[in-house]
Image (tube, rainbow, N blue to C red; front, side, top):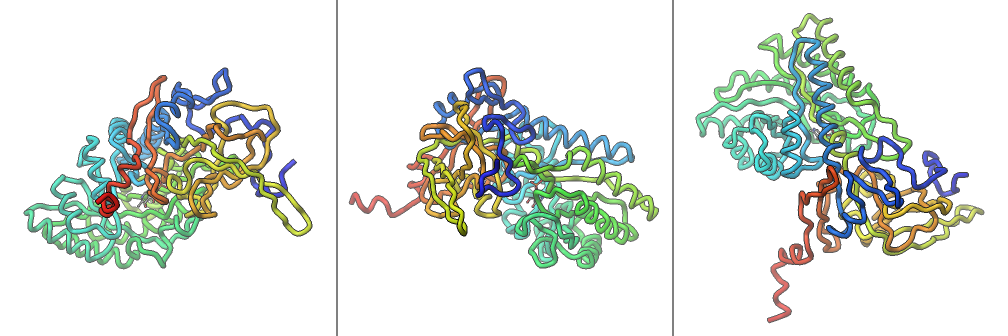
Length: 467
Ligand SMILES: Cc1ncc(COP(=O)(O)O)c(C=O)c1O
């Protein structure tokens, strides 16, 4: 029976040790001792070697997800005689190792800052496979991108076209550019994740984009190569993507009438499962459906089918990652709701909103399991919380775990590969956790954790006490 404080979508499990498929990394399983292992490495060994909190990526899972997206797009585009390109959204998670895996899988990179660009280039990405976007790129960032030979810059405002033109002219070069279009599609996701509503900062309206296309075509140092749209992130329904595709083909039709065919980059945003109740579309089917739809829309209007690009992040990096935490405190909290009284078990772990801001930012839900052992004790409703000074410092808002969950247990939280490490902070002066990759029974440190000394080193006033 469900707990009175459990949200409607959370079903009390028969076995709170079981791993629901589609949420956890492909190689995650319970070993014979009951302990979880991932990439053939036990969580105990990982925690012992690197400490907790710890981000762990199943390398093979991430790579096969990248390949799946790339293969689906290549197959869909080749049926229509056009090309497809996938740019991995670095903002979801980037590190030198990830760059080499993703590059080897044949994807390019979407970078949004000089920092992401530096990791992509430092990790060995071909500059010709990098597109640079963002709503406020500095002149320095633009110049760095152009010096590095970054393939495309996605323009977000007319003033940016002027800046890129001026920098290209001073470098005596030409720069390929796209224009980000705000299609006005209201993606069915959290408000902060919807990026194509009218009243927000990204892109240009179709009419503004069309006038800018003309300015760029007339310019001496810019080459117009395509239109870009990204309607938001963690989207489950197909309708938003198809509606955006229709509106992009409308703009394509008008811009094409005055020039050559060009690429339509339809962004990322494919949703993933964080809990058992999430039912995302199969990403290969979704990509195929969108490409077929674009082809049909173009055929209907007598237009040549454009090359198509996507830039997904979460669907590649998200489910391949988990976070390991150690339980420090457990505390039953009595909750009065009207005449009803119920108890929720709070489980405090050694990280929190500093390594996963998404629950606090978006009210995001996650799933957890005791990772260091299994237990036959009946499941109890728990809220996994962090160690930070906010009541919104929640890691997993609602989950059933074996009722004997106790200090010292290692917990694994699923699908933390995207937008967790990349959004991490030093709140309450904690160091950001390390990130490791596991594969074939061994682990590799990808990003070192910050020690307290690393964090304190930034504070220029600390030596004063010792003077
Ligand atoms: C412009 C752009 N492209 C791609 C993405 C990747 O989205 P997702 O990780 O949901 O696929 C984002 C995410 O915010 C974005 O802003």
